[in-house]
Image (cartoon, rainbow, N blue to C red; front, side, top):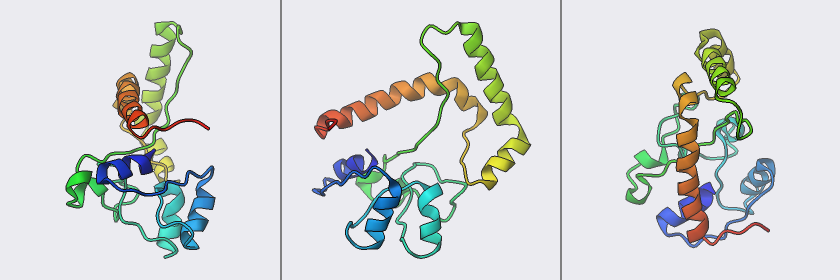
Length: 162
């Protein structure tokens, strides 16, 4: 989806080759079978550090504290990419209809965990980015915004499931 958004924003006519695993895409970029790819900082970062891949920037609008040398594409002076912002996130979801008291208990527990300085240090040492604890309260908005953003891209790029 990140590549499709990149193509759309720049008006590029590229053949998008979707891979099932990043490792195969990385191998094909290194081997010259594929020209470029989007990869997670946590997986592709080591290949960039070793010189096997070259990074042109990160897809998030904000700098990544775990990869400070990589500049966001949105900040590199390309007008078409000034609003480019693609980030992956992991969230905790419960079934619809879960009582509000249980949802609130879970939210508070996750905020407590994410607020623990030692936990944050340990996770950062593993190369895993963490949102601010308050982000746990904004999950509904994040999901609604993503549905609009990615739904529009799916329609405009005529993306279908095989």
